[in-house]
Image (cartoon, rainbow, N blue to C red; front, side, top):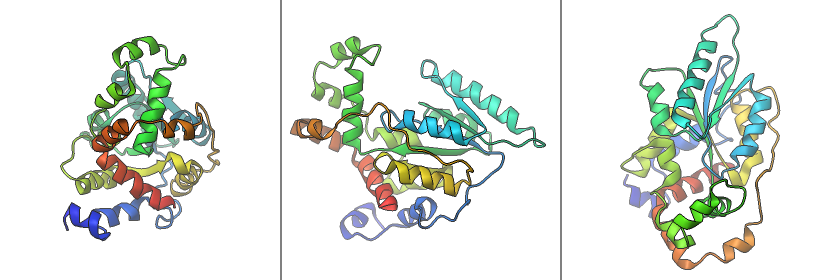
Length: 259
């Protein structure tokens, strides 16, 4: 069935049905993705409650490997090598998770080796994520906020620089249709949560992966977004919407899984 007919008719495509079967809490059996010797690659998409989730993961896994944001590629490879070496000690299994701002190209470096790695991430409404990222980059919290403000003097200038489908591109790399992106997610990921349902997402992750510890919801680096949302110019909304069509579809699909 074509992508267009799925959107307009409300009929699910095969890829959408398979996606829900793999990720919807109501359809995934407890401990479906449980492995006593796990190595999970948890991709931290900027401004999707990643800092909060990181604290929960540290408490739930035997070993937490933080990937440096300063030299992500090298840090990711070094930390993954350590995790795989630890996993090779089959007499002493442990559950490990790597978390950081790595992307699909980093994941594929190891996937080509046919290694037993699971991917996981949390996504967010594209416009809300964009605005949160902009506010952070222009605040004193960001060490290079002055350079950022000089490069993007207006909100619209930053919107014009937004990559196409920023979140899905980080998660899957290139794709030629929404269904193709879903197929890649179905093949490589064992968990996708949403910031707007963070508590439910973490509980599903714990249940589906058979984690003993509770994943407590920590809220950090969050601010009031309601007033800011009202002040977003229509031009910026349109630009972000035009550049995030598939991100928005994915967010709606995942949100329905938790709704």
